[in-house]
Amino acid sequence: MRRIFSRKNRRRAMSLTEIILAMALLATAFIPIIGVMGTSIKATDKDDRTIKAVNLCQEKLNQALQFPFGILEPAANQTKTYGSSSLETLKSSNDANGIILRVGPDSVLDPETGNKFEFKAELTVTDRPGSFKVPMYDPFEKANNPGDPSKWGWSEQDKAYEGMIYEYSMKITWQDKGEDKEKFYTLATFKSKVRDNK
Image 1: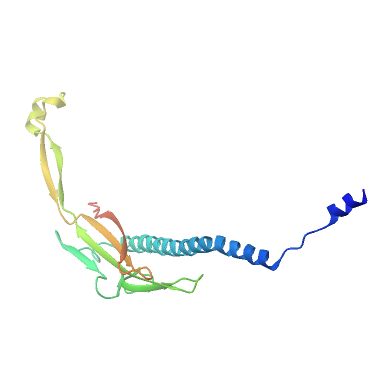
Image 2: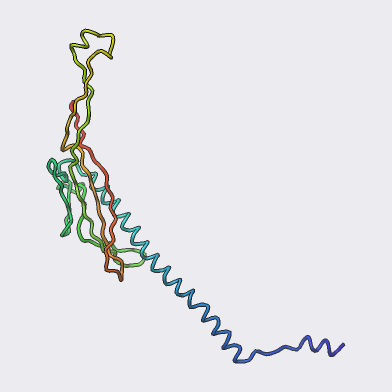
């Protein structure tokens, strides 16, 4: 009984070779994991820059849409581009409460990382002329058949317009670290010139 008990309590010590082998196996297993982590960090950084570009694009387009008519809009059937070559500061008025929009090459500082995000904002405003059909009736036919609108001599007339609907397009361009090709994000919307005839 004593022999059986002493055999169970006897422990086998690990040799230095076994420890080195175990460490080598662990290191080999961690190499792909570290590689995946590095790739993941790079992808996260690129996604972060894309999110910044989207937010900047939305913010600047919203600012542009708040400008009163007559400041950013081009002439009829024309296109105006702001910020394509140099940094421009556009103002809606000369007073302190006016809207200020900066377009062109610029940068913002990330408060979390302290890194600069360099980008170029370009605003393009284009007049979008068009036409619509207006149903018209003949007043003489209406006088002859006042109770039956189907006999009023209806016809459709084309009404053309220009200088009433503008397309606002904001484009943010940036370049990721270590890449030669520029990336861009564009948002576009329409703004109409509503006139009150009263």
